[in-house]
Amino acid sequence: MSRLAGKTALVTGGSRGIGKGIALRLASEGALVGVHYGSNEAAAEQTVAEIEAAGGAAFALGAELGVPGDAAALWAAFDDALAAHGGGSGLDILVNNAGIAAPGSIEEVTEAEYDRVFAVNAKAPFFLIQQGLPRLRDGGRIINVSSGVTRIAFPAIVAYSASKGAIDVLTRTLAQQLGARGVTVNAVAPGMVETDINTEMLADEAARAQFAASSAFNRIGAVADVADAVAFLASDDARWVTGQVLDATGGAHL
Ligand code: NDP
Image 1: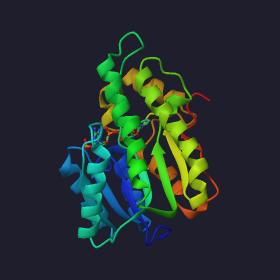
Image 2: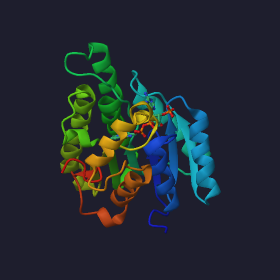
Image 3: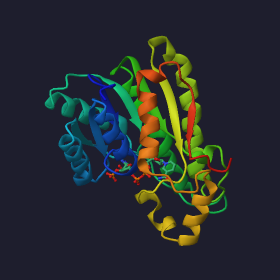
């Protein structure tokens, strides 16, 4: 498939987990993919190597998110890496995927924990979009990775849930404005997916069985389940879909 031939994509947090799956999938469709990482350069280079081994094109770029100046630093790294890769300038697909978990109920979450999860999950995508817009070509795509917790209440992770709620509202609001440029803005909301973020939780067999049972398909999600939904939104097939939060929870808690 080469639905994305000639397109340039950036996947934040493309070094591991869901972001890695998205990077591999977009590259398999012909996009040149910027694989962003926070601190794990080796994992990002591994993603790039897997893409290249499969015949695709990609480059790695690092920038810590959730710190002052993060968006400017990421875009500077992106511009440099893209130019070094001969990719010219500009991009077509921005996937805001990087995120962190934040356990804690309303009684437990500290102000510092709240600030941190909002800085990485909500503020960083906001300013990445703001500073990315001049680079994003007309007809482009912005895809934000939200979470099923904006539909399904999980009081034990309330600050995380609220940070993803901010993403859903940002998605709908920007879609209205950016339609004039033919840019679609959508979110994908995964349910429980087997990645590093959940290693501890999924090590508990009872919890694992419970999460699986909450899906209509009685299993935990795989990275590819989410990456495929993102690839749809990135494609021309989704040109008439904007401002949506696509539930990719495997029908959890229907
Ligand atoms: P992982 O922990 O497996 O990967 C996180 C990725 O984000 C890594 O690439 C990591 O980079 C990057 N990252 C994390 N924090 C920062 C930071 N401060 N600065 C820069 N990069 C950072 O997570 P998942 O793949 O599971 O999650 C991806 C997205 O999906 C997140 O937004 C998450 O909230 C969401 N999600 C996940 C679900 C799940 O069950 N897994 C369910 C619903 C939503 P590095 O490798 O350098 O550390």
